[in-house]
Every structure is written in C-alpha cells, then in structure tokens.
Image 1 (tube, rainbow, N blue to C red):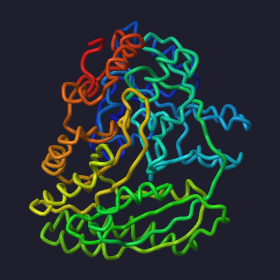
Image 2: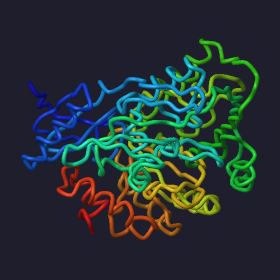
Image 3: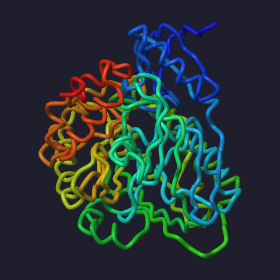
Image 4: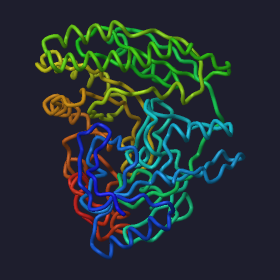
Length: 437
C-alpha cells in the first residue's frame, strides 16, 4: 500500500503532498513505476536525504525513495573506480570506500546526502585544484521519462553523460553511478582564528597554497574561523573523543542551537551573542582520515543560499557583502562560509568553465531570510553569480540561462530524455523553463 503522508525536506521549509510515496527495491521496479506514471500522465520525483533547501523533489504525483538502491556493486582496484547504487548516503559510502583502501578526492562539510542528490545539485567541497562531486562520475545509469533504462559514460552517449552528471532531477532518475575514486589518504587539519581583512588580502595565495582552504566569518566580527586541510603521510592522530564531543557536539551544535533560539526570540541580543560565538571558536591541529576531516555533524537546522563567483572576484564581492551587512537591521546568527573549487566542463555545473569562489549564507530554521538573501543576491548578480542548485535563491530560467554557456546542451538532453515532462515540477519550470525551449 502506497504511503500518502506529506513529505518535508530536512530543513522543513519545503512540504508537498504526493499522491503516493513508494520505495522500489530494484532498478526494474523504478523503471516500471516511471512507465506507469508516464502512461497515466503523472509526474514523478525522487528524494534522498531531503537535504536540498529548494522544492526540487516536491510533487503532487509519485514520489520515490531510493534508499534500497544503496549497494556497492563493484570495486576496480586497478582503476580505483567504484560503482554504487544511487541511494547510498555519503557517510556510508565513505566507510565502504575506506574498507577497500579508497576515498572520494573531495567532499563537502555534510555527509548526510545520497550520492545521487549530491551530484544532481553540483554539491562541492573546497580545494582550488578539485572539482565538485559530480566531476568524479565517469558512468551513470538513468531511468528516462518513458521508463527506459539507459547507461551513459565517457564513450557511450557521452553527450548525455556530460549533462546528466548535474541533472537537478530534470533528466531522469539516477539509479547507479560509477565514481572515480582515489587511494585513501589522511589530512592534516589546522584550524585557527584570523582577521577577515588579512584573509581577503591573501585569499588567492591561500587558495593556491593549500589542498583545502576555507573560512567562516560571523557578520560583525573581526576574526574568522579558518580551516587549512592538507594531505599528509602521517598516521591518523584524531582529537580525543572528549574533545570531539566538547567541540563538535556541544559547542558547534547544542550551544550554537541554544544561542540561535535565544537570538530568534530576543533579536536585540543577537549582535552580542554572535560575537560570543565567534570568540568561542576553538583552534585545533590534528590528523585524521580524509572524510572525517571534511564532514562534521550538523544538528542545528537552517536555511541556506550559496553562490559561486569567478574566484578572482570573491574578495571584492565579500567586501561589498560586509558593507551591506554593516547596515542590515535583522540579526544574523550564522557565519558566512567561504570556499573555492576548480572549473569543470559539466553544462549546468555551477563551476562550468571557471574556477569558482563560494559564498554561503545561512539563517536559523524558522527565521525570515528573504531580505537578507535577496540583498546579498543583488550584489552577487554583478559578478555573474550562479546559485547552488540545492539551495535557496530567487533566480529563474531567464536570468540563469545567460550565465551558462552550455545551457542549450542541457536543454537538448532534457528534451530527449523527458519529452513529456514526467520529471518536471514548478521549481524546475521556474529555473529551467519549458522543455525543449
């Protein structure tokens, strides 16, 4: 019997009431369900962890969960290529790769997502010489809008492979991917507190000098939390469990959640609380398995907007954001996250054709975000900013199309794979426009 309960994303800001919610156990079941929906003129969407802040997974039709498609199907130790079911969560994937001496070359700071959801939205980590997660996809299996199952890779339907690596759920249901992994490695993590002005002045050099470089700036604060993570041959020397609990669980989650609740109820205290949060950031120096350094627990729920800019434009853009924030009346309790990534050749990747600097903006769950996000977005539009496909923004297909030189290639793939709009929904209609246009 189909589940007809409302569906909500992780942050709780997107809700829909599908006609039916189903959990297919095989690719053939997925294909059969899509074929049925296509014949009936019904829409189909898929959800994983629900960690996207947009309505990309929402539907009033058929909503599928691919949690059962989570197997590691093959491991090629010679090429370091691993084929996995699309529903596997990143945290589970990291553990399975570690068991065979492999790792993802880069990751974001959250590992709750399914691999299919992470690549569909061009989810990225930080590293000037490293692309987003979708750049590791060397083969992909899709169920098309008519229920056909196809495989595409670098040599088989390479045009579809190129587009489908970042598909935003518009091209088909990803059921399997082959990933180009790397030998497992450790990272030496150094976390410090440093002035924002110094970081902006030396941004380009820091990005080049470190394998992974990022910082977090609390609006109104002088100093930032800075993370420099570099590959090392040293054995793992993780922080003691007590320190991990104190810093990652109690400080970054329990205490941070408490101060956000206080700030939401008593906004006049917010600036003081924000400075206390910034001052209380711990400095750390340790070595651990790469994925354990990349990803952190995130128990405090929030809403997020993130933009990619030409990397050379980031210091100026963040300086303008700082000026905007100085006169902003509403309290902001979350830091702004700053990262970098390498250019790629994926048509709708947010880093297509350019090395990118990233600015991510957050507010506490249940907090008004419209004036903050729209004010910042207006600044980033001046730099040809591209919004992260899984995070909030106010763009549409008319404003986005000029920012993607290979937009038409993606549109052609969409018209071929989903001509009847089986995978469409209002969000995709807004950001991608009509099929075939």
